[in-house]
Length: 378
Image (cartoon, rainbow, N blue to C red; front, side, top):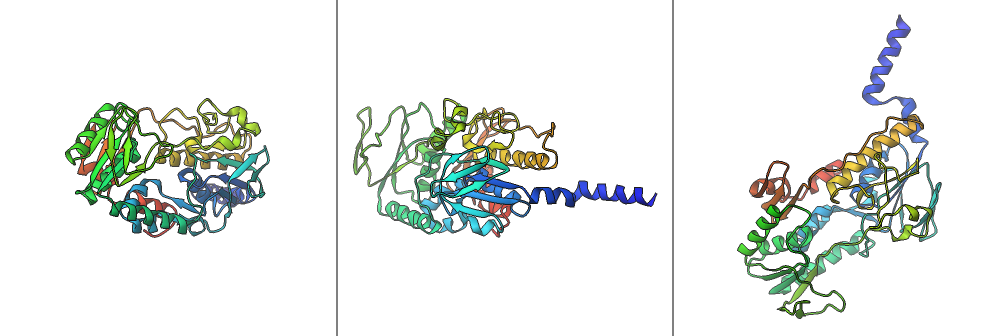
């Protein structure tokens, strides 16, 4: 009876807190994460104290993406939103380089590092050509802000969430500046529905932003202060900001075995458990995964959570038939900030613009929440 009760208590404690045997199994595993964005940083942090984690990233920092446009108008904000990998990863190894190739057992970086793995998570997101160090990135924001402060008129190229949020930040903080936004699409923030587009357009126009749709500014040889759109519209602006979408960061995979598993958009084909098709120990999450949904940061974080669960299950039972399934977002959902107080939100039950959705995002752009999740003070 005493042995039975002891075993029962042990099982209950294992259910609540995890068993020492399970922790030991995970501790022996080598988990390599490629890409230090939302998905990769979240996953690396999740295993930081439990496994032998290696994070491969060309940058020495993680930048909270939701805060990027606020940093243009307020560069000191970047001190909180740009975080050294070494600040939130206490035991993981950080390899500052881009990945060059991958096999079934190891990753080779551009710098020549070799990272053998038991599990690999690919989360390289979109292409990146920015600064490699936190100090350089902070300096870049200060330079962008200096450019903005010196300008009486601004041209924003691109009317997706980045372009719209930047326009909102500028007109709220600098209402006397003339802002022109040129977008090649028929409506703004096309990843959301028409109502969100209409509300955002009206808000910007009420703030005296000139919005030009169905037109584009060629990016090759871009220089001011005089610009001409493809349709012949002439624009004069003291400064310009390019806010167009980026390509998927998968070109490095094309010469590897996994290159055969890229779809037409350059995304890795994954199964319902977010494993790369045909691979038992290689996962893909974030923008590079071909999940059938819009690509957003909060979804990348959700995918990371599913992969964490699945790696733990596979550590405990490599033949586990009960892996967690990732369910893609059924309908577009999102919040686009419009300055420091307001936002437009497409929710499951309605599309609204004003202070209520602004309370959810616009004040600190999820910086405090993200830092807390990484074990850092706000």
